Length: 368
Ligand SMILES: NC(=O)c1ccc[n+]([C@@H]2O[C@H](COP(=O)([O-])OP(=O)(O)OC[C@H]3O[C@@H](n4cnc5c(N)ncnc54)[C@H](O)[C@@H]3O)[C@@H](O)[C@H]2O)c1
Ligand SMILES: O=C(O)C(=O)C[C@@H](O)[C@H](O)[C@H](O)COP(=O)(O)O
Ligand SMILES: [Zn+2]
Image (cartoon, rainbow, N blue to C red; front, side):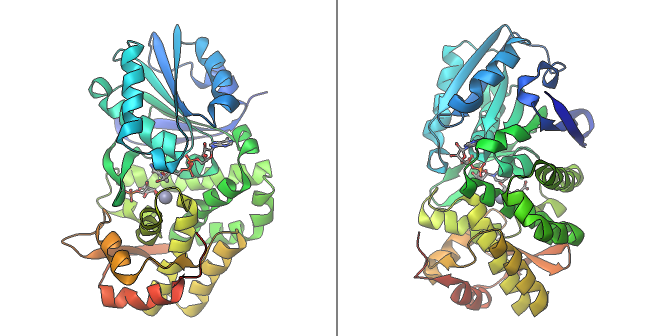
């Protein structure tokens, strides 16, 4: 049975698109009925998600497209690279996909970021639809049009802004998600509370047991509120010239952890969770927030089951990686820091100022 719980528009003028949130959506042809007309589509997915959901989506798409192709990539953050992207192009060319072929990104954020990037490049651009199957992808990565692959020295270094035609977030797919991945998704949910909505952070803290137990109404509310916050920021600042940067709370530290340990060692959400604790510590030292607020952020991150102490990358390596972050300007590191309940700001910080936070929040004893 299909239940459409919410439709949230990302308002971008002629490129406005809906985020559909509900149950049974990938098995229902009405989810895709009014997409641009085309003869063919291609599901881009990975070898974990394909056996779970590709056939169901394929059958649905067969009601709309004469040809439904599948491109199955190797799973993992370590494969968010040129070589794997090339496999998408090779498959599209081999299947004679034309300029109208619509790509369906079926999977988590890794598949979504790569398929969206491929859609921007193939024949200089084909339409694509995000079909996110992780909590993290449903609350964050499928929305807003950031697409990319990683560079060994920096996350998401090579990519485009390319908005999807639609996001189809089917809650049922979360039933099969490993618990570690569910927890990683909660990091980005907590992020929205910290940087944009203090009442939502209260709600998250109170509802963590329900979210961890995959209670559907709780998950639906978390996805709905997260997507509404993100959609508003993207509509206001699509290409991150201003307020959109607040979505990067915890990410300067987090991306350094991911690249520093090697992609896939820590999950993106784990690194962001720990990165938010580090951002809170730095903000407290800079007197942007008080002790109580910093402790509250750490408490919620810990209660979700996310790490709060980072591995010790070594001071020089931390600084080198964080200077390479996309927000850095003229070699100056910039961090998104909490600066009040439900508020955040972008701040340049010198290496000597961040040193005590690295000292307090990282440890050689952290298992990787
Ligand atoms: N574009 C953006 O705005 C944006 C935002 C946040 C994160 N990201 C990117 O997203 C990526 C992280 O995304 P993620 O956390 O979804 O990781 P992921 O894509 O690696 O998926 C996590 C794991 O869960 C598996 N999986 C996916 N759906 C499943 C399901 N329903 N059942 C069982 N297993 C399933 C995947 O195969 C994978 O092993 C990172 O690369 C990050 O940089 C992008
Ligand atoms: O959509 C955004 O804007 C975000 O910053 C969302 C982040 O959660 C996400 O991890 C994004 O991919 C990070 O962007 P980047 O520009 O720092 O690579
Ligand atoms: Zn993120």
